[in-house]
Amino acid sequence: MNEGFSGGCACGAVRYECTDPPRLVAHCHCEDCRRSSGTGHTTHVVVDEAAFHLTGSVTTFRRVGETGLSVERSFCPTCGSHIVARYAVRAGSVHIRASSLDDPNALSPNLIIYASRALDWTSMDPALPAFPEMAVDSARALLEQ
Ligand SMILES: [Zn+2]
Ligand SMILES: [Zn+2]
Image (cartoon, rainbow, N blue to C red; front, side, top):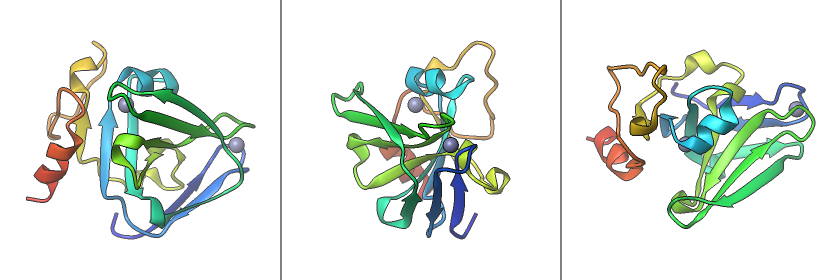
């Protein structure tokens, strides 16, 4: 995906436009992603906050993540579709749920994080680099080689 993209929730009350292509597309197998996803992982489409423009209102769930910094997940209060997450540890970026894109097939996942926590019945693409824990910084370095 080399261009901007759009997406929204299942009922249409929340919509967004992103003016940049994704910086990174990561499958995450952490417990929080699993519990909020409906299956064993979430796929995050990471973009800069400045490129992300949301319309409609979302409900936000906040908690303290493993890093000790805040984690926020925002979803449509009407239909419950997850839209974005924001991690204080990566301030300035927005993690859009791949499931909310209008054209999720246009994505090319780059890597897997928290692979050590994947469920026994989850299959992971062996062609993708898989990090046992978060390791997003080393993942970025890998992508920029
Ligand atoms: Zn909705
Ligand atoms: Zn996760």
